[in-house]
Length: 121
Image (cartoon, rainbow, N blue to C red; front, side, top):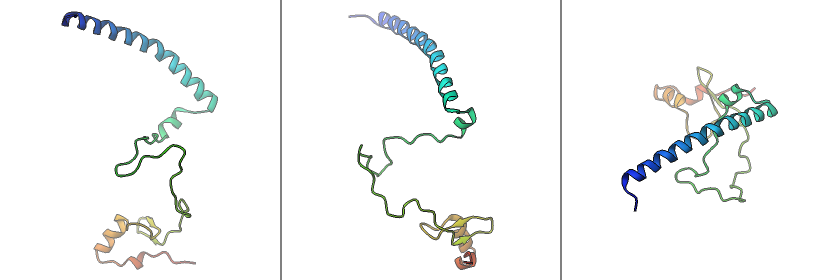
């Protein structure tokens, strides 16, 4: 059995090897990324504005997606709905879902929800 000093020596050697491999692969990885960026016309600004990919783990309290099975979606899911209410700062609300904070605050100040209704023309 190896003693502690031998194991620490092996750890140092392996860490040095890992650093060397990372340094070698770093350059080739950067070149690969640059080539793909050029091929697809991707700019640094595109990367900065990109949203990170969602985790495959799922959301707390929700079942993880099963490969090959599409999630159940309502018939009208994803359809934009015209705004029914407009706030003093241009905020809008379709009237669906929870009351937004801006409208709840105004109602709390004694104003009526109907006073912010968008008039149909």
